[in-house]
Image (cartoon, rainbow, N blue to C red):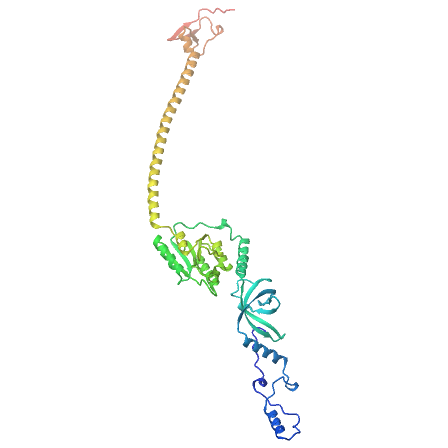
Length: 426
């Protein structure tokens, strides 16, 4: 029978007994013969007991289906997966094998939500199934409602596949981890409003730093719809953007209870959050995909609260110590600058003095040279200089003529003289 088809009602010939007429009356007319004939007319004939009462194949398979489903409730069956096929419709078809027997199985897509990953051939599993008959082929099969691998097979497979995809996209790289704000003003908490995790986070944060504002983003943390609800909450916080840190998590629980935080949808939403994130799922031994992609992984919700906010009293003490250290550093800096200015002033004065002395000595040397070359110095040694009326120097005998007046320049004055004669030396 196809999925979703309504089961046909049994034919009316099976609901009410029918009497079939005898071909010809008995020939013996004794008391026993008459009694036997009467009984043959009164007793109903079973369908299919004779060619005249033959039933259809559809009726036979339907009756077999009703009998098997009535005799066997949903039961757990152990076996090995083989010939597994997943069709485009989403339905799974496979065989469940034992040591010397097998049975065909089908699992509709609507029943696969609780299965973490598709099983593989050769995997040992236990399934919750309803034995039935597939009327179209007249074969015995099981409709499967739940699959669980022996051990952690299916859960581990689903986790490994999701981890591999996240690693391939670079979402598990340590280099993409961001530092948490040291002094947050507002922290968002994504968790169940009724869980112990929220109470632990509030208690720790109120004790450590009462001034920090806590914003609760309620979300389902387990069961159907939990992954979608958690992803919605993360997206809501990211679009709001008015918080400094995001804590996502819940308290401990069974593997199935924590599985929403192993959802690839939730992990990708957390990795894409623009706000620094802290994952605090379960206890210290529980590691989820959210722990791997978050900027910081806390072993417990209480540890997440400790990582999110500092101790206010310690911050105040640290600030006071920093203020004292800053003041001392400023005093030292001012003293160093003052000493540097004084040294610079002394060095500048000494430098100016040295430069002035060097320039004074140089000027004296130049002045000495100029004095040695000066005509005045020559005059001081007893020499005189003759000049005509225009002030031109008469440096040769050819410039003199008898009777010509000229001035004789001496060291301490000028003498007016007249040329009486000129004697030229050979």
